[in-house]
Every structure is written in structure tokens, then in C-alpha cells.
Image 1 (spheres, helix red, strand yellow):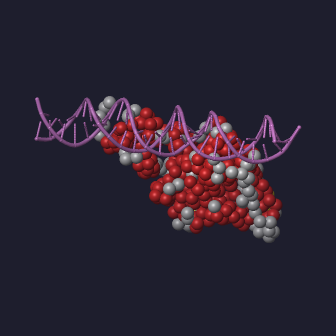
Image 2 (cartoon, helix red, strand yellow):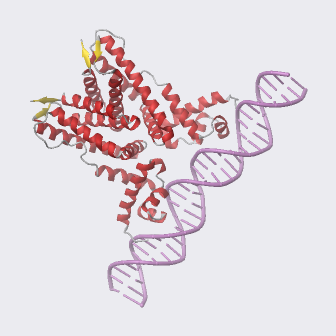
Image 3 (cartoon, helix red, strand yellow):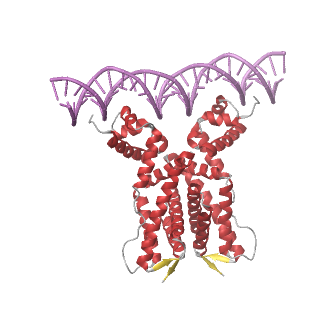
Length: 198
Length: 198
DNA sequence: ATCCGACTGGGACGTTTGTCCCACTTCGTC
DNA sequence: GACGAAGTGGGACAAACGTCCCAGTCGGAT
């Protein structure tokens, strides 16, 4: 087997773990399953990581750090704030449809983190990141539309995150695209009313 | 040990399983943990149930069947539709705050059901129930406020379920009551706009 | 060329898991 | 009171789990 320095191996294992968690769920993400996905031996696992828990913790932080601007509005002028916000949410929805298992994995990781006090901060950080990204998009949107949020943006962002979470969860269950679009529409509607549309 | 007929034992085991899942999570709900909670021996478990999976499946269906009208509006006249809807969501929120672990358990059970094709219908049924309950409340609310939904109620109900789901998830992570109330407010706002307020 | 630390493979360990077995006890029926 | 079905207890099983050990190998500095 090729010799790979420990730090790279950590990254490879984290990547493999994400694949396994996405495909089969956190419960099936055993050390052996992860190692098989990464194509290495068990010894390499425990050479790179103290324990499985350490790997999962790093998986969470890594994946959160890598989180993209999925809801960002397009940089197009001439649209209303409502149109921009709705388009942003719908873009997130397309992202969800493209890789549902990834979002499901995120959900499972959050739940996992919520289950032990020492890991709760990981979940909190995950959501803080979501909120920060949402706030960024919302500010950009307001700027593009020439509007102004009448409520602190962070507050608006929290609501947006809650709405997209709800959209994710319900769509994962019923896979009803039309219903999801209705949620997106209603959410954009509610959010826009927190702004002063000039 | 007292002799209990198998059907009663099934019920007792389901109840014990719910306690264990709520308190420690689905992953820790082993046959032994459940049996200890119920105060019986392992043999009794497999006398009442074929397998652990059968128990979990029954737990899901039982708990869904038992699901209460948590979002129902109070039967008070003279309130606007918005006030009724917001009050209903806030009442759900109080319910969530009173027993967060129960809602967390529900979430975990949904995720579990989503992970295997043959169990997916259980999750779908769970959400169908949520939607039916929500629709009922929304119709009652419209009646009390003398309003009329301009969109099919079931569609409105789906949006409501998505919003409460999002509220649940985000509150479980950050325990931010003010943010949750803001979500409730925005959600009620969005929903009310799907009605004709007379 | 040697050597030392970094890395690897395979096998093993002790636990915990779900499930099962079997001898036993209780209860309702005759 | 005998009897069979229903229910119980404790111990056992194999499989899967996380973790560890150790003999070995590679590669870069000396």
C-alpha cells in the first residue's frame, strides 16, 4: 500500500466517512466500513485517529467549514427582494435535490452532536455557520434590490435557516417538489415582510 | 416476576423504548437497555417481539397514532386569523420546551425510518398525520376568525408542518427562545397571507 | 550503506450487540 | 389434582464492534 502521511490520511478518512454516512447512515459508519471505503487497513485508522468519535467530530467540523454559499442570490439587478429571496431558497432546494443524502447526513450529524453535552457546541457551531451564511446572502439580496432589513439581519437569517431546515426535513420525507416550492414561496414572503422595500 | 400477557408486554416495551430513545437516543436503545427500563428479562422481549426492528417499527406507528393536537387553536372568538395561527404555533413551541427530548426522539425515529426503503412508509405516515392534524387546526382557525383559505388547506398545512419542523430543529440546537418566537411570528405571517381575511 | 522514525498489514483482544435455547413456573381448564 | 398452553429466568451463542499489538517495511536523513 502506498505510504501516506498521517495528516493526509486523516483527510482521506474524513472524506470516506462522509461517503459512508451519506450512503448508509451514521449508524452504519463503523470503523471497518469507513476504512473499506477509504481502501486502507484498520491500523491506519487508529494511527491517524485516536478513536472513532474523534473522526466523527472532525467530520462535523470539516464539513461545516466547507459549507458553501448555497442560498446566495444571483448578482442580477432589477429583481425585487422577494424574487431574489425566493430564487435563493429555490436554489438551495435544487442543491438539496441534487444530493439529498448529503443533507440527510448533515441532519444525522447534528442529531448525533445534540446527544452528548460535550458535542453540543459542534451542533451550535454548525448552525452559527448556517446563520452567518444566510445573513450574508440576505444582506447581498437587500443591496441588490435596494431594500433595507427592518429587523436585525441575524434575526432574519435565523428565520431563514429555520425555514430551509423545515423544507429539507419535509421534502426528505415526502419528496413532494410542489409542496417544497410552496414552502419556498411562503418563506420568501414572510422574510420579505421583515424588510423595507423601497 | 408478575406474569403479563404478551400484548400488554408489547405495550410496556414500546413505552419503555420511548423513554430510552428520548433520554439517550436511538443508538443507545439496545434490547438490554429497553428491557432494563421495562424491568423485565431479555427472554420476555423476544417472547413479545420477533426482533428489535419490529419493536422500533411499532414504536413509530404507536407514537404517531398517539400524536396529539398540539397546534390546535383555542376556541376563542374575536381574534384575527393571524393571532390564532401565531398562538397555535406558540402553543406547539411550549409543548416542545416542556419535553424537548420527546421531539428529538421523534426526529431520530423519522431519520431512522428514512434510512431503509421498507421503512420509508412509516416516515411518510408520520408526516401525513402531522399534515392532517395541521389542516384540522387551520380549518378550525379560519372558521373562528371568519376567514377563508385561498389555497387548498392541505397545502397550507404542509407549509405549517415545514415551519414547525424548522422551528423545532433550530431551537433544539440553539435553545434561543426569542429566535423561536420570531420564527413563529414570521410563519404565522406567511400562512395568514394564504387566506382571505374578511 | 545505515539507521531511525514513520507508516502498514494482519491478526487478535475484550465488549456489546441481537437472538436463541431450555428448564422452569404459573395459570386457566377439565 | 392433572395437564397443556402461556409466560419467565438465566445463561449461552455468534457476529460485529472499537481498539490494540507487533512484526514488518518503507523512505529520507546521516
